[in-house]
Structures are given as structure tokens and as C-alpha cells.
Length: 264
Image (cartoon, rainbow, N blue to C red):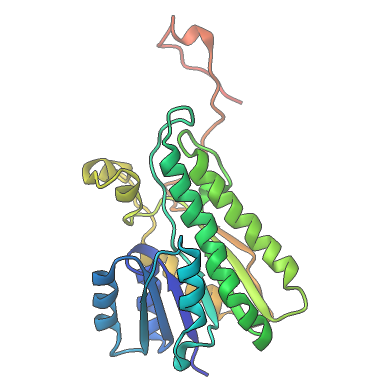
């Protein structure tokens, strides 16, 4: 049976890479994104490999999401796999200087948008007793870092929401997976720094980060496992990334800046 896959945030990064990977498998693709030009270019690129339906849509718009996903054309109406990829980080300011507008945008996209899409498609999966929801979380949902404030909090929500979905879906054959990437070279940093490509490039200087194709390959593997196997969460970092020691502020550092503090 041909699999029908809906991917949000399909115009770049992990979403576009997943679209290419599932097109190679001959899946029916529903590609959702805000940038019409990129969606139509991807449609043109992939339509020779798979049936493709594009929806120009902002997942923050609850009514638009509900209407669009309730009126999918017949060949695409039974979604087997939902990849909740749409999301973003904005800014790295500490909480007391951060923009409330940016916080709201992250919450509306990373949290509300993900729940709108899930709620729109989940009843059909339950009725058919099959399906898989793959949510794109982040290591930022597990480990705090300066300036991660609301972005990390939204990804912690994605992790817990994914686990709670599994609890609610016990007794069905619907799987839920939370993928948690670390450092990955996509448009993520360009968006975070509002188009400052030079600053974004500096994030990856001297590293070998994950790529969008790496994450797409992982998602394809998770989805291809036997139906009785559910990967709850999968955290993945490049080998050049690990955890930092605990940060400790020492009052004497201002007077003795050359002091090398010991952490434990």
C-alpha cells in the first residue's frame, strides 16, 4: 500500500530533505509551508517520483489548518505519516531582554501549530487504526543554554506532548516518535539571527554538524521499523557536540579574570 506522508515546514531543512527521501520511496506527499515559490519548486522537482499535493499554509492559523486538512483531495485524504517539522528559534537574548513578539511566534509555531496539525489528523488515524506521528523536537528541550529560554521550553513541550500522545493512544496501532537533533546546519541559524548569514555561519565554524539529510535518513529508518516497534524518543548530536560542564559564577572573577574556575 502506498504511504501518504504529510510534512509541515517542507520548504527547507529537515522538511525538504524528508520530502526528497519519501519521494524516492514513491510515497504520496502532502507538502505544507508558507513560501509558495519554494513549495511549487519542490512540487516540480519531486512530481516525477511521487504524487505531490502542496498546501500554502501557516500552521499558526488554527482555522486554516483545520479547513485545509479536512478537505484533502481523495488520493491524499488518509494520512499515514505526519511529520510535524514546522518550527523555529528566534533570538538569543536573555529572558529579561528578549522580545515578547519573538516568544509568541515560537510558541504559536512550535507548540500551537504542532498541536493544530496533530489534532486535525489524529481522529482519522484512530478510525483507521494505523498511523505514525513524528515530531521534531530538539536537544534544547532537554538541556538549557543561555538565550534558549522560550525556544527550549517549546521543545520540552514537544517532548512531553509526544509522550502523552503515546499514553492516550495505548491500544491502537498508532506510533509516536520525538526526534531531538543537536547542532544541524540548515536555515535554522539564519532564521534565528534574522537573515544574518555571517553570524549564522559562525555557529558552525570548525565543526562537522548534522545535515538535513542525516535527520531525514533517521526519520525514514524509524518509520520503516516493524509496526510493533515504537521509538519513543531519539536524541542525536554530531560527534563534535556534547554536554557542557555546569556554569558557576564566582564573585572574584571580576577582580581576577585570569582565574580558571573548577566545575564539578
